[in-house]
Structure formats: structure tokens, C-alpha cells
Image (cartoon, rainbow, N blue to C red; front, top):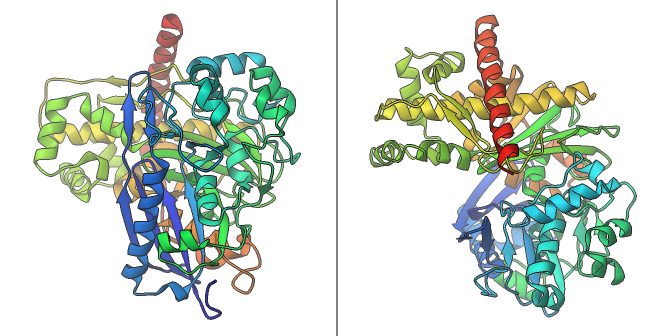
Length: 542
């Protein structure tokens, strides 16, 4: 177990493309990080898969690398917390991986969150109008786990029957670390239809949608023990997990969170900032996700939730997710020669490099975000490359890029990229407005994630939404959120106290004045028209 004088915590984040780890002290200061890539396997039919063995190996290398970067030893670590994407991990009763797709490769045993193979199953589930759907905005998404489980049953029955464990990726990581099969209320409530406010699975739902086997067996394969995030699991790290991670056996392990929720924990609870209810967490990375906390249930059509204790214990979370950085990449790749020339000249779109922002500012004499957005005049992007999660909950709609000409230079690539950021901002504005109409208003957007580190991007988002954007002090708020979960009695009595002790806001970006607001109002009106056209086209072709 950890040494009595251990004063540091580790947060682990498994995203779509990599596993990352960070070491923090008890004030929330980041001391060292490391990351390792994870392979993404793609097949026809919207199939996207990963390997749980590869993910765990990447976690081990990242933790060891972060510890080395911090200049600390295993005895300095008092606890470790995990977060991950909402991907489905399939294992046999002995914990060995099972194949989940057309490759028949058991190493590829993870159906990634963005995998849309279960769209038909999703539509059938939504047609039932079961009461559990009220807690996912009225319509479940193919990114959630019950449609994927139904797809497995219908297309790979032998593997479905042979499975001993169906894990959300976060719960797989804590199981791998401790041997505990406990599930976080965050994962099972947000992605598996667990009724967190009632502390139970709804048996009638599983029977009605065609997964009666799970109800018959008492939900043993999807979780019979559900705990709050931050709960200490088992006896801490097992001997095997400790070797893999380079830590001491018995080091406390906390029940984890979905990655976006970890970003919320690492940002919205900073002392003196109004608390989680006043602040919307906006995790802006490979995908974007909003997290709003309310004290009373708020049902918003098209917005996932309310989810009981999914982020802040005792609070109710509303959640919305969309493609972000990958959507901007797709916007740029719509003009391959431009993207290629941009990459050749050192302008990698995925990184939102400062050089893009510098070029935008130079083009307008050093203008702020409100001025820089004008570089996108005539260009409009509705970045719904994987459908609309909210407020329309439409997996069939697709992106629109309007206003392309024959220009083929870096300046045009910058304009296209800024149009993509504006489009993401307008999607965020939609969700803020529809939630406000239902009584879930926010005063500040607290941004986290690698795609949101640019001052220019932050200002454009503030201008596009009309809401102040705040940036946390730490560069790794998602990792901090997972580290906060690993607090222990004596460091902080509960998660909310640890949030106040370990997170703080560094900078704010207020929206521009009347002229800027009028400019974005006009663009927003066009955004909604283009969005409606895309949805109408999808409906006609469905």
C-alpha cells in the first residue's frame, strides 16, 4: 500500500487516441505527465474498435513515464483515479478478450464510443418510448451501450453468450487495477440506462428491447455493485497491476468517471467561482462535451440526462457530446490539396497550433476573436459529421460546408478552420439556450481539453455563444479531475471539497460588444438554416 507520508495523486485519462497520466500534489499542481498512443481500428459500416490489452499497456507506460517526469517514486503516491471514453469492453469469464466485429480478432474487443454500427438497434429501442429514455433526452444514441449490446446479440450471438463481463472502459480500468467488479454510477447511469436516482436497473427495459438475458441473470455481466465516483475499490492495486503501473501494491484506487465528467470535476468546482451549478463544463478535445449540473431534475429534449451523481455526488448532470477536433479535421480534409499543403508547411490542424492564431491575428492587424471570426466571412460549417447529439438527437444528419471557392492557400485553410470553430460555438449556443428555457441556466463556460488551449479559440467560443469562457489554471484539467477522485480522508473529506482545494480559474474571456454579437447572431441564423436543410435531407433519404 502507499506510504503513510505519501502526498501525491495520479490521474489517468484514456481518450480516443492515447492514454495519458499526470502526477499532482495536493494543491492541484501538475508535476509530471506522459502519454502513449492507442491504435484505432476502422471497418466499413461505421465500425471502430480498440484493444483493451493495448490500452492497459499504454496506461502502464504512461503512469511510469509521468512518475519519472515528476521525479517521484512509487512510495510518494497516495492514490490513483481513472477516466476514459464511453467504449464497450467485452471479456470472457476469465477476463480474456473476445472479438466484437468482422475481423474476428479477439484482441479487438472494444467497441469505441464513436462506433455507429448499432443505428438500427437504436431506432428500435427509441420506438419503444420506454421511461428510461426520458433520462437520455427522449432518444438513446448508438454511442451508448445497450444498443451495442443488442447488436452483439443479434450479429455475434456466440460471443455475446460467451462473454462473462461487459465493461464500460473506465470500469474495465478499475477492475484491471483492483479486481473489483464495482461500476461507477457515472458510467452505468450515463451510458447503460442504470436508474441512478432509484439505485437499480429497470428490468422491464431490458426485456422490452430484447436483452432479457441480462435481466434473467440479475445483471451480473453488466454490474451488480454500483458506487459513487471516488469510492475506494477493493484492497487497492493488485500485485499484478502494481507491477504493470510501477506503483506499490495496495495503493488506493478510486471508482472512476467518463472522461468528460472528469474534465468537469477538474474545472467547475474551483473555490469562489459559484460552484458546479453556475458553471458549464466544456471538454473540448477529440470530441466536445458539455456538462451542466442542477440541484433538481431538468428534462431537456435531445440532451442526455438528468443523471444522478454522475459528476458531482448528489448533483444532477445534463450532458451533450459532439465531434470537435476530428470534425475540424474533416472540415479541412474536404479540400484535400489545402489540407496537404497546410500540413506540408507545418500547420497541423488537429493541434490548433498558435501559428494558425497568429496568422489570423496578422490578417486583421492583431484583432481579437470577434475580429478574427470575420476571416471566415462567406464560409459556414455545420460540423455534424457523426450526426447531431443535441438538441435534435439525430444520428442521421450530416455536416454541411458552404461557401467553398477555388482558393488553395494557407489563408483559406485558416478561414475554413475558423468557420469550423464558429460552427462548434453555435452548436454550444444551441444547447445553452435550450437548457436555459428548461431552467438550467449557466453564467460561465469553463473550458478544458487540448483543442481549447488557444486564446483565439476561447474568444471565438465566447463571442459565438455570448457567454464568458473561463480557462482553468492547470493545463490538464481532465487528468486533475481523475486525480481529485483519488483523494483520501485527511486530504479532503469528499470530492466537492477536493474540487475546491485543487482546481482554480486562471483567465476569463468575455464576449464582445454589440457589433460582435450582431455579427454572430447573423451567422448563427444561417447555421440553423443550414442545419435544418441537412436534417431535412437526411429524413428524405432515410
